[in-house]
Length: 126
Image (spheres, one colour):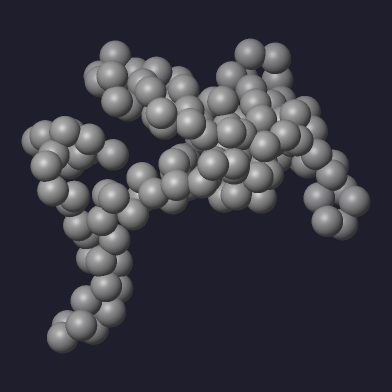
């Protein structure tokens, strides 16, 4: 969640990006809306967690068990057709990560563990 320049979390006003619309009526998403999506719920349920994990860029699906050491976390789940799928989560820290990026990655790892345990994640910002 960085632009070239200052980090979004340190900006006084939210950053906006155009996500659609017409030339005369653009649609925007701003960083406040993204943060509200992430942290605006007191409890994040399994279906919400899966959507957020997809958006984080660290979640992949495969039919076979992952090779040992190929990802940080994995879990086996049945899909709606009764077929077994492996959910892999891999979002390693990079040397260029600042504190806010590391904290977001830790949040997504905790979210995956809650998803793996089929439990809600309780979010408290207080």
